[in-house]
Length: 274
Length: 274
Image (cartoon, rainbow over all chains, first blue to last red; front, side, top):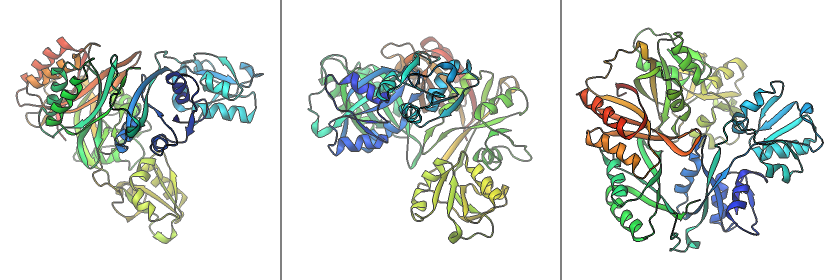
């Protein structure tokens, strides 16, 4: 299963939650590499973050879902993001001079860091990469803010747990696979969700008409996201997640009616709610 | 008029387009400083980018509009973003070794830059700041990708115009002012727009009901954006722009009906379409 980041990244944690048993996690440097690894068969699945409960959607991955039409969403996994202060096993809080993490990791732990104004905060490209850096430098003056899993991977210790100012910090991941490898009947019998994308004509009420189709069919809209269409300023592509009823015919009917009032309609995947 | 960035930034260009005659542009380092400058009376107005036609919404400024409830949107200005290769006046294309710009400026000119693979691309925090840096270093080996205005401000020359791969590159700005300074009757008689924000209860069809109010009142929705609500994972605040009819009573009626089916409803401003 391909994921973006270093060993011990939150993407790897999401893989351990979604896949039971013995699964091999394949780290790749950038999000497009996750899609490519799946498309080229180097990975059977990929996992990409799509949304964080504090910072919002990860737009690059919405855009990639459209750029790779042979990839489908086959699952959803939400994980709690818990930030920890991690150091060399023998280090103490008094030793720390510098704290390394992704800028969002530092920002999300600002209340804790404000209690230690003498520590230098150093932005890093990746939380797990910050942990690896602390392990490699092997100085008790360095600490990282990262997951407990990253501490375990790099032989470091968790000195303080749960540093985040707002504990309602969750990231939602999509599990992706090749369309060719996806059995047509993957829509689950219960707790099913579908992700759709479409654009609408630039005329009054066009988006409303599309949403009316969903409401008429009794589909509950869970999330609506808009992205600009390149080359068409102030026109948008919409991404919508809906809860699916047990009857699979409802989605079919909905897609048929939607295609009459929208453009570029795509079903990005049907899957069991995470 | 406060704006974020260095002298010659696109925000300053937007100010020159919106305000006629003699206006003093006040550069500040970060977006929150624009809101603070207006709130504290150091600037009568501020201008902030809200959306780019290639990269999408600037979410930080949507969030700031909510964090500063005493600030209202009073105008809208769209400007074309035209990237230029700018150098010292005596420099030639053959002299160039390094090109400085904001990462988005470099990415948006990738087709042009790919024709010069020997040039090193150096990311800078700001396009206008890159121009200032080129002027200060005074070496013909350095070039910046920035606006023609930035070239003029720092005494540099435009060596190549219109480098962007996709010319449909526009940024939309909001002009903001203190609510206390905003006459109640600012809704324009024609080409009026309003920006609203609200959340809805976490139950089936709740967002649809809110949008139905707009449709029933004949208000054309121009843009819909969602942002996470901190502390309430997977619940969203919605931002909506609508076209206003000439009759000001329609918006009043709409707000009254919306407040019955939404939570935290706010009218962020009414203004003339840019």
